[in-house]
Amino acid sequence: MTVADEPARVALAAALDAGPSGLDNFVIRGDALVDAELARFDLVDGMALDVAEDVRRFAEGLTGRQFLDYDPSYQTSSSQVLVERLTDIPELAAVDMAIRRGDVPNDAGGLPVVAMAHSLGTGTSRIVAYRLKGPGIATRRSRGITLIPRDGIYRPIDGDVLFYEPRFDVLACGEFAYFTTVTLIQTKLHAPDKARRLAQETLITVTDKILIDGFAELEQAVMDDPTMRAKMAYVARLVQSEPDYAKNLTTESLIAFAELYPDYDIPISTVDGKKALRFDASPQHRHQIPRLLADDYLHSYLTNRNYEAGSKQRVRA
Image (cartoon, rainbow, N blue to C red; front, side, top):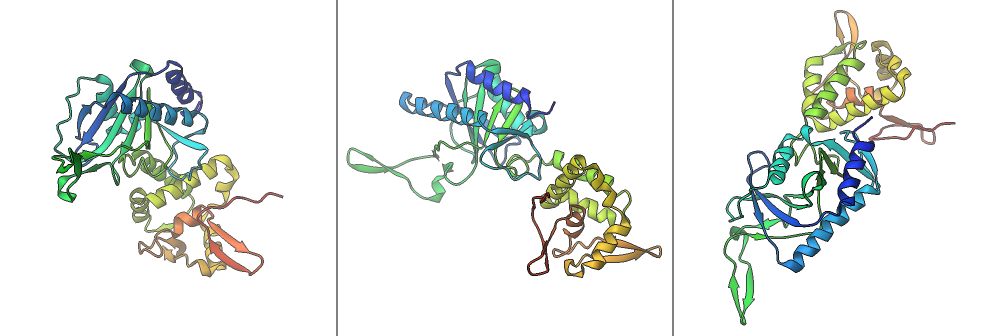
């Protein structure tokens, strides 16, 4: 059973059924989530009710979507939500654990704000909605002077100014994290390990029968480049769903393809007297082998032209 199957959906539904009440608000200060300082703050009653409703509405909105295990190659639609175990997002997991553990000091300003969080409920029914740093989350005095009216006189605000928006990037519930932007986990959450591991394993498996000049450099590039990692995740899913696809991944068949379609400009070299694919780290060529492994090409029967394709849907008769 996958993460995105019943366990994640049941956990979120159970938390909502428990009628989460009580709102706690947190600000996370530092340069990044790792080693960030967590502090809490209160809101006036009226605004607290509005924020609690925003969090509840966000959580309820997720339950109506299709749940998918996080995969770095996905481009999600508005009807889908990605799910990952918190243990695979260690920086977020540490912050989330601190929030659930409690005993957090009151916010006194200071360091830059990297995220804000709002939690509802207690124990296993507690849900926490996170908004990660972005335009408008906080303003330091150095960026300008914020004025508010007091008895007809506009006075400057000392310290930081926080901006609240009814918009959240991640929801944590139980052992799961729910999010809708595929790049979020690798960029803002700094958790690319799973994608790197999957990309490396897939590359080694699908190139077992392929001679590649510069394989070590290709492997490192796949590990480091999010776009190449995503392409290898797509290859992994393709091979899993269509086992016969792997039969096409041989040196002979790929070299023949590269020579038949020179427009794709796929580098070829010779290793020990045998033709081999050549990995070229230059920007215009570094993605060619992952694209080739993914069969990431299109042909126009109207114009008889060949194209590289970012994604494609197979046409079945």
